[in-house]
Amino acid sequence: MDKETFFQEYKGVVIVVLGVVVLGVVLLLSMLFASKQIAFKSVSGQGASFKAGEPFTIAWKASNVGRVGIVLFNGDKAKWIVQDYPAASGKYVWKSYPYLEGGTDYHFAVFEYPWRKGGAIAYSPTAIEVLGQKYSSCYDFAAEQGWTYLPSSYANLHKVFLTAVTYPANLGGLSGADEICKREAEKGGYPGNYIAFLGTDTQSASERIKKNGIFVEAEPIGTLAEGVTCNRMVAENLQKLLDVTRLAKNLAQVELSDTFYRRLGDVWYGRRTASTDTKCLPIQMQGVVGAFSGTYTCQNWTVNKRQVYFGTIPTEADLPSCYDSEGKSVKANYYGAPSGGYDDKSSLVVTNETCDASHRIMCVEQ
Image 1: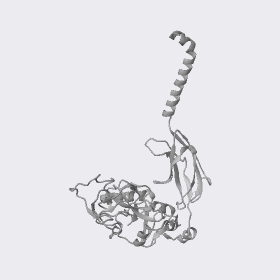
Image 2: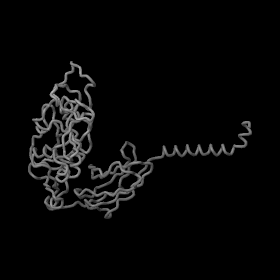
Image 3: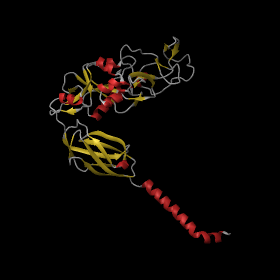
Image 4: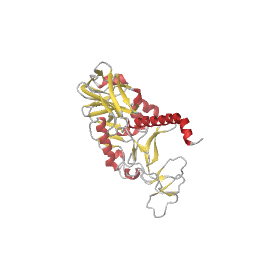
């Protein structure tokens, strides 16, 4: 069969196939280049007002958006409600924070997650009133929650929090770590001056804490009528705060809030006390024997590497020597620092990790 005869007999089939291909290409291009949109549908609950601590539903309609984040705005302050949530669900039932202050200038934003400049975003069209919970004293919170809560006006009170995200060990030194604490405190709405609970090779973390006193969680549980917040007690002094970092898991679950407890198993420490050794930190790594770090602080929080040398360490290497478990003199061949974690017995322990890991930072008000 020649080409002309073939075309005459199968012309219809060829046209249909070409039409399907063209239609498929058009549909594919329309999907790739279709605009991403999010439209706010409603905020349901008790009308336009909601009582702090009670659940309500935020609803939206999204097109060509995979995941969303939701933020609550009050003036210039913003608090996360949810991150990395499926956009197709179209709604999120949020149990509002019980410590939200009452006010009429609240708005929600639903946006494409992660946020990028030019990404799809929608704001609640009208302001929403939040009816804040009012208690006469922090004892009311203590009775309700079954734990000690102290007012923010309590004498010699210092707040503590653990960063919301993890950071590699190259923090930019102690000054960089302190700056991280300041940024996260501002983001969380925690007033005061915060520093990182970290040490260097010449100064331990506990030595940096110049103001001893009672330590409470920075995240308040509620607000009194006069604006004073109620905060859950963590430790009655600095030594007790150090003890908290060694609590058994079952005690930590009882004595700390759920968020604080979970984050405590994922924290950089470095040198915690003045008596902590400053050289040759043994690194516990599965399958690796004889891994040692020259400092307890990832070179004063300036590196996020794992290994100094591979194989034999040259004699001219300017690295400290120490003794391993067999009493042999060795030279450091890894970068490392201690961090918090839970062991197989569910106890909080300090483990020694390489500096390419990422952990949270404990921030203390000073």
